[in-house]
Image 1: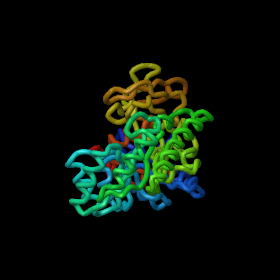
Image 2: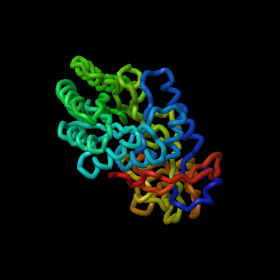
Image 3: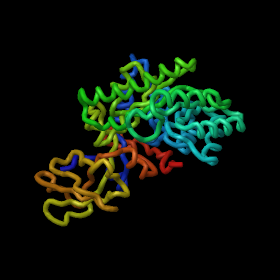
Length: 362
């Protein structure tokens, strides 16, 4: 039978729920890991998109916050966060105008991987009387954004450094192709190889007489190795704070803190229960979520508005009207479906937080 959930009758469903004790323990645990490291933590906002959580991370000791888009950076800046990295390329007149306007109010650093984009950013910054920090993004194996390590990165760093309105800060590289691999020696070896591409590129840039003070990257799935190699200066981990079912498999040291409260609305036949949260409430690109605290219950599939749950044994006792918690497989995209999250502590609702960055994809 479902674990007793005192808060559940206060809430309508589907509802995004955050276990505050687990959230705060995860924040403390990650920050504690960095206490004896040269690298510092710069958590990613794109996971939780929630200003109270960002402020908890800063209060715990994070150096600043990472954003994915200009619109997320705006939320952070107007929410009082003073140091923001946009770990992405910002292209196009409208976005660049917003970006340099933001840089007049808070410290903003942005990633670039093309000379033309660097020149556009520089011209806009000069016109606005602002200065943009810049990290040259290097592709270290993910095959997404970034220039090649070595000579291409050195050349782009030289161009960035020559542009008035820009301040060359260093490099960004993300070993995202490795973060969800199962832990083990092979994953560690590949992570070290990727990070050493950044180390060699940094040396080449410094041999040109440029100062490369920051090397930014990493994630929840690789933070231990990425922060311990003595190369990275900041780690952009995001999922550790709220956790989800997929990341819990590769970083079990963090507690699941994110759930969707679901009501059982139908028991059409033996072996099947139907919940009221579908694809509009729980995302599935990393697989199905996990039913918590109900032995013998497993999410089989999701339609638009329904959770189809296979039940056996004790779970056959699930009845219409019962409430259950489902841990989503991917927190980042699930959180973005909600306007608010309910924070619970020891079984009771303590707060309701806006998802301030919801839909901020511009």
